Length: 346
Ligand SMILES: CC(C)(COP(=O)(O)OP(=O)(O)OC[C@H]1O[C@@H](n2cnc3c(N)ncnc32)[C@H](O)[C@@H]1OP(=O)(O)O)[C@@H](O)C(=O)NCCC(=O)NCCS
Image (cartoon, rainbow, N blue to C red; front, side, top):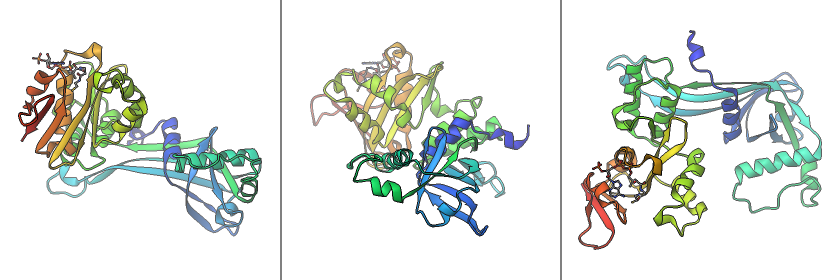
């Protein structure tokens, strides 16, 4: 197998990367054949990528020409010493990248122009606070007419996910342990992505879980709906609206979880933590069908070892009836505050 073949990315993932990128880059040629390279806000609608432009300028000049539009995301830098104590050669960066090739088309139809502009607003000003853009709204008619909108059909799209696929199991084990130990902000997510890209890599010790369960170091927006489903019925959340439960998960400093072999979310736990002094653990839950099999322990161990939590000297949580579960990890009831609070001093 050629090296390149390791890194292929599914077309939908490449399109998703282009769609989600805060900024994409456009390479094309202008009227005089001069090279054009621009950074753009772009949206994907109905298998086309669109951006807006001034009616006069290099972006509009490129209409009718071939172009490449690209996006990328750095996942983690991997220093050489992970693989070799002396040689610099193995230093690398793990990343995702995607590019679309095609011809640029001017969009003249006001309804579609307005849809593109509205989609750009929804992407970059998701909180709203404006009247939605439509072509026949008198507040926008002039603007829709005056702004150029350019599109490229997403027929030729490819991507690359460089996540260690060219490395053997031993090296990947080193990478996973290094990322977890380094614990920079993107590193827990990098652990999850490297494992997902290399499904046969043995599970490192810090991710050991009961058979059939797979721990996740960095839960995110894609996990949200299922996590809220697990949490909404729990006794401490009965009066908490679902959107608040959701906001709390994504705003946490540490959010870990687990999925079963079919991909369903079966556990979730989070912490708000300063990485050095104090952490508070919340919303720790295991799906009913999975309770009593050791998954809660594995989840708690991972959460306590999370880079944002592991350095904290004081770890707090509240529980109504799971004291014995936490005591096994050194938590004690707080004597200075009788009641439901427990604290782990370390
Ligand atoms: C508490 C919870 C997360 C534990 O998860 P789990 O996967 O069932 O736990 P494990 O299988 O890893 O069991 C860990 C140990 O804790 C004990 N334990 C589990 N739940 C407990 C509870 N609610 N109270 C007391 N002990 C409990 C188990 O008996 C087990 O003991 P053992 O090792 O001596 O056999 C899970 O039961 C749950 O989601 N409960 C409902 C939500 C909840 O109460 N969350 C905690 C809020 S603070």
